[in-house]
Figure (cartoon, rainbow, N blue to C red):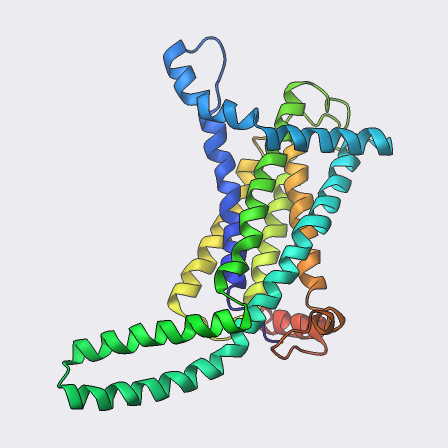
Length: 310
């Protein structure tokens, strides 16, 4: 099954955003025993962000879900995560897939036009005695113009495929800070379950952090299977994402269980949504321009076992 060319970049962004929380933790105010000047400097921007309108809206969302459902807080967090990601990010992920599919479908046409353009530039270069540098400049300039015209014609500029990141990242930050604010208010103290009864303290068993790291690592490994012959840059990016996935384990071990639970639930929902978008029925519904496998899940399992059972 042919996959989007920028899927690796999407998951890289997804993992990079987790690193932001580490910086927030370091810059948050530590208490009254710090010196006033340094404390204000360290916590000023963080406090403003935690007190922003999007964060308070996310707080209201979480509280409303819990009050309307009557569910315990741990389950309410999972329900809110599923709802937000399904109603907001899933449609954007589908739109991203459509845009990328159109861009991929244009590659053959772009390749053919590039060959013609290269010939025309070489003819003109001989007529006008252009240097090699001038010829390359004219070729690249006109190729960019042609490609831009094709993107406009098919309404598939690659930037549109990044809309998911620009929405998902602020949403993730806002929900994480909303949970932090609720933790400080003590609202989640008795809302846990099983081995994490208190959502305001870190998971001392490390089960949630390890599950989060393994889930993110599974996502990376499964969606790296689309790269049959990855370039050096792609392999470097893949190893970087693997590193962030493992780094999330100690980070999640230092934050309240509510945040680790949200990150874990968000990763699982995102993974299931991306598997859903591989479905042949969904591909037909979205009228994707590029051909897709009729048995995507079996192909994934086959590729997975072929790679890791050598």
